[in-house]
Figure 1 (cartoon, rainbow, N blue to C red):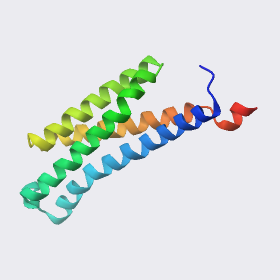
Figure 2: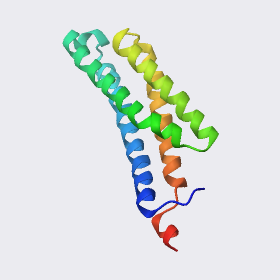
Figure 3: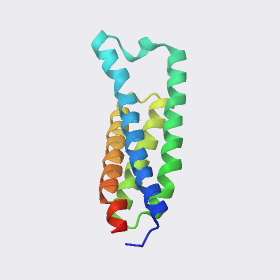
Length: 138
């Protein structure tokens, strides 16, 4: 492992923690409409066209955020297994989320949720694997 400065160590740990929470919030955002629709016994089409357009903006926003955060992380990750985990989950998440938003392939959203939860797990794993500042200063 490369020797990192304390500032770089703090930045990496914060990025992984931020990535974990953003991935988790994204998964919750995707699950919530389905739970609401099921609990009220209404179909997806009942939300209306204007709601779908605003929902598509959220989907695109999450994909852009994932790509902005994910692509640099892929290039910085030295462990091959984690690198491929990031690449595959980011690709599945991006493609299925955009297909859901623009091609109305609503069944694919479960793949996007799974990929988002997998990304959250990778970030949490990386966060736990990073040395803490206390162990770095000892």
